[in-house]
Length: 225
Image (tube, rainbow, N blue to C red; front, side, top):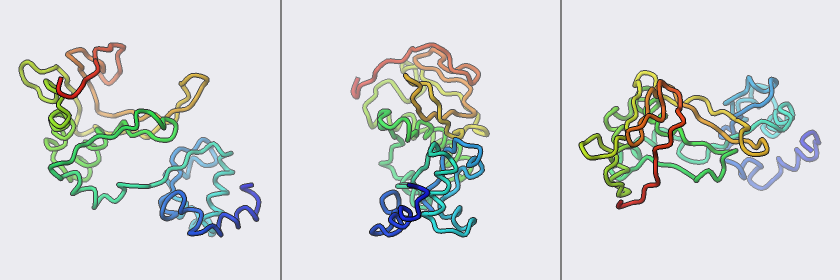
């Protein structure tokens, strides 16, 4: 079907365009995780830029690259919070809390577990939109206070010894990976970090010299307890 000119014409003729079901424009559809050597060089490129480079329509460019990747590549859509000029005041708003999770419901298509390291690496070091102190507060004491997690979020006597030791010059989120380590070889996305040297949970090291340990000292936290 992707090779069929009639099918491509049908996609092009859809009301508001085929891309409207995915994103607003073709420059917001991006090849995130190529799984083929034929498409590896196109990683993080938008359909619009590929189409311009090849001199074809966006629908043809999309279908061609899908075929070149043998239908195994993963595409991403920029749906919300991609305009950094608009995000900056959101980050600085006194009511803002840095948090994001869908509880693993889309683990093969969505992975945002690196939002804290992205905050420290991109927004603080690279963009300088926040001070390091402001960013650390946003992922420690501020959410602890908002969610009523008593004894957490601060390095004070009597509180839980939860500590992250990181290098401000290196901290950041690595390129998202596609791994197949779930039951029956099913896929999930994984984001690893740079510059995180040690992590302590309840006083026990769960990351040592950048390597996760097998310790499991954490426990379920409930607001107000």
